[in-house]
Length: 534
Image 1 (cartoon, rainbow, N blue to C red):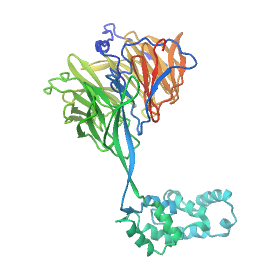
Image 2 (tube, one colour):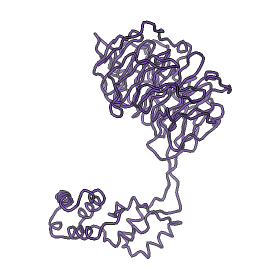
Image 3 (spheres, rainbow, N blue to C red):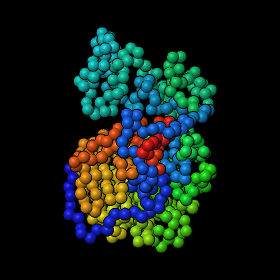
Image 4 (cartoon, rainbow, N blue to C red):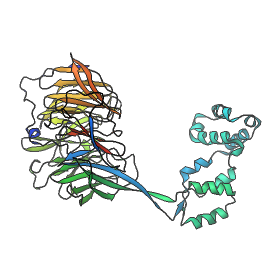
């Protein structure tokens, strides 16, 4: 449902002159202007047949994980991945958390409770049960014999012993194994010596050894560069990474022949876009970040003394780095973007950073990091900014936000123009010229600015983390991770124009440039032709 507000008569027509000057590229997360819209380029098809968009090429397999999206600049396609591997280790550690697989309990069980559990495990009732009924009996026994607090602390242990019955390890053997929980042995021989004197049976010794890692996880942060014309690999750059976490979602940014990114070990990096040479690395935070770098052009920051551009990213707080060296220039904890990415806004020859996080849309001076104003925001969406309009999409799950908020902004503040009742799990809105698109949680809508007129809205799409994009006046909405819907409007209602069978990797977003669509699959990059006659 769209709730409209009276728009001021004095409104500067939304235009982004820089957009017309940008060649058909998608050099950063959310495109040339970070608003989810592709630059003017080749004319796109107005209809598609049953075969959908034509596949032009698919890259060789790209080994690596994470949720980074592809970008395209200078005739090249760039993708950041984390590549896991393992190395043999000499030391042996009996992992305490894994001992639960043998039936051990991390906490000491009160003797009286332990006696009751053992009596039930070895009792006549348990002996008469077959495997089909054991779990049901065990659940009832726990409900009848354990308090709520005991179930929280010892329920899993008790259920395990009751279910195993006569096959459960003797308590003495479990205690012996637990006595070396997380203990470090210099090598396998040292562990074998302990096992030899432990009193455990040969089967029990084998079970303990099966829990002990003999290899350690490692990771590389890898940036892969492909030729946009044919998908062939131009170069790969590797840096030390960290194997922990869910997998980074940070997308690289290409600017003035440099590739900027954030690695899984919490480091920022800068590569030469031509050959992948590492130009610098700098500490950013502990662990991975899902935010993506945005570039403040050189000279755009108020009073900037440095000739180089600035980089801004969410790394806990919002931070700014010197693009030439990686040196941190400032940090602003009051503008933490969380999982979202900042957007750069240029006005009056000065640079500003818009951040969506902590339930607010925040404007920060790019020069010194000072907060200038804050208005309601929320969710994980990246703000879309153009001219003096900013759009942010809130999340109904986390923030219970109103939906998609459209603001008219100035360095002094923001005025809400309208709001769309379209929330999003994690995707971002689109600002394409004088059109605002919102898609997420099964709804889609389109509104014009500055008029505030609703062109269409309705139930279209499904819940998704991938973000929609616009190109050539066409809106493309990722649905699940198997289709890309072409969405338009008819008589004020959202309508699906076509369903393109284009699969992409979960939580990643497509890029479009020059009438070509670039998507990340689970292990490749694919390029599709969206052009008329393609």
